[in-house]
Image 1: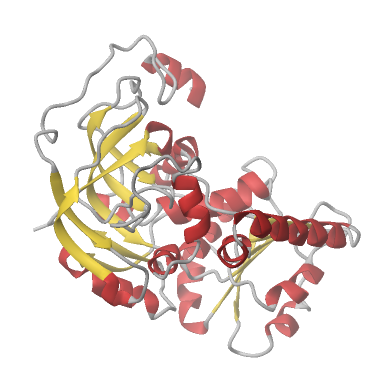
Image 2 (image 1 turned 120 degrees about the vertical axis):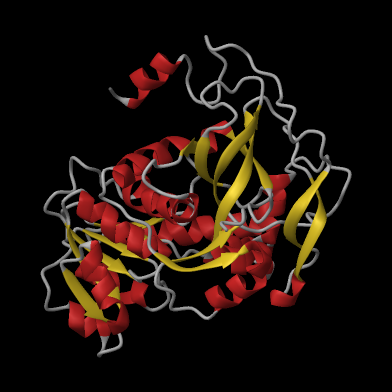
Amino acid sequence: MGRLPAMLARGTLRGTGGRAPVRGFGGSPRSRSAMPSWVIDRYGRNEVLRFTREMAFPAIQFPNEVVVQVHAASLNPIDLSMRSGYGATALNMKRDPLKIKSTETEFPLTLGRDVSGVVMECGLSVSYFKPGDEVWAAIPPWKQGTLSEFVVASANEVSFKPKCLSHTEAASLPYVGLTAWSAINKVGGLNQSNCSGKRVLILGASGGVGTFAVQLVKAWGAHVTAVCSHDASALMKKLGADDVIDYKSGNLEEQLKPLPLFDFILDNVGGSTEKWALNLLKKWSGATYVTLVTPFLINMDKLGVADGMLQTGVTIGSKTVKHLLKGVHYRWAFFMPSGPSLDEIAELVDSGKIQPVIDQVFPFSEVPKAFLKLEEGHARGKTVINVVDKK
């Protein structure tokens, strides 16, 4: 049964009203006005992280929202960037586009994008989920994050957690999974029916997005070349990479040139790689280069909203045309929250085609240590936070 018939059989589409009975708000957490949370009150380095038991309890403001009790969360590079203020101009515009909020500040701000947990409350139009459901999600960066006891999310951002994973394991996947899905499927156009036999190159393959991307395109039948450091090569082979290239063992461009040309390149590294990587694509065959390293938020921080968007548009437009004239496609990709995409990812996880890759797990009391661990770089998979004590 496909997704649409399955949802109809349940009585409604995700996040909308339908034949299922209308629910009000559950009573259990509503008597509370505050909850434990890690927040920042200003941008900076690790010292700005502050633990509080007085963070305002998340309220359902729209009928399609749910409150989730966070069992586990995980960190991503965007959390380090947001802690330092990266993207604040664009994110604040998204938080309050009409400037109607009474407060001028986004603080106190909770970081963390990934959540695996249990639905506690549902808005009036939510009938795809009910209290007690085990779910996972990636919360968009303009919303309050998941390093809290509870978080509110739109129902269309949430999906049922893979049955085969614990909350700790599940929390490692949503943000990196949806980022890779956006780049490979939504932007790059690859899917289960057209990926078989394609040659795919993944630059920066041992991080969170990279480890997911290797598994995804391999599950769809691609031939995968993974670029990482030597100490991650065993992990890459375990995840299914056909060829593993150590970028530290010599000039990377020269190592890749002798290989057959590629149909698709995913770039998690950026920088100088963009100058030569597109030469490795098959010309005039629909081959595509997708990078996740873009100047969009930096431009808005430096130039303001209007000029930043204009500069970004000029940059992507000129690069797209330049490479199109050379016979290859050049694209930017971003994280996109999507419950339906998480549904598809959950099927791949439950079928054994994608597994979580976790570098280290920290208790909720050690969130600053988890940030420092991520800041060290060269992680092999994800840094996970157990919010609910697993003892």
